[in-house]
Length: 112
Length: 114
Image (cartoon, rainbow over all chains, first blue to last red; front, side, top):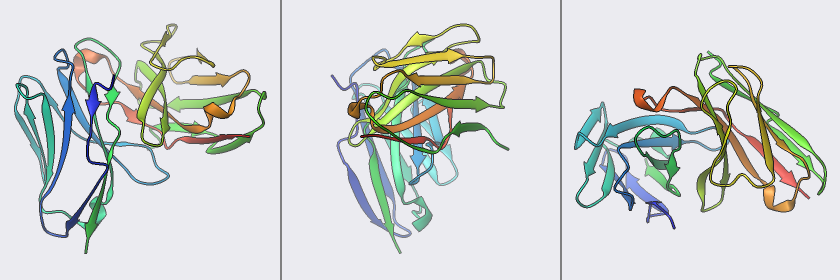
């Protein structure tokens, strides 16, 4: 039973346009959500997070939106740059736990 | 600025051999983690250590053992390697859950078992 789902394995976007990566979850106990970026042959790098008391968090070109009623999380990258080409993982955790549950990842390709 | 350091970066084993993957962090984090990443599966938690002296099972612990050697170091051991354990292994470290601070990952160990 996959509690965190990224249904789009890949996404291609033109440079300068918006990239929207989606993530759905089934566990209503999750209260902390994160996005990680991963380049080949490197470890995941933390990008941005949001707690369940918020519905939006912004950091430069990156914005994460949380829709708790729909159990849906999205990452917006504006404007997209070729260096953003990577695999993006969303992750979630329950209150007071050490365990992150990861989605399967979305490979983003930003075309120059 | 080392962060989380994993050794070795690559390893090839034969079925039945044993192997210890090493991980060290210099961020003074209390908690440490071992994940494996397989194609189409995302990252799955093998074991974690909430603090020095404690370890707990994650989602996929079978076939693995761990040791929290001290606050900095957390090792993962395969006693009798199997082809199903061919994977990329990532170590991570983090603060306490209440801090809502993210886990930080090493660059991984790519392990092939023939």
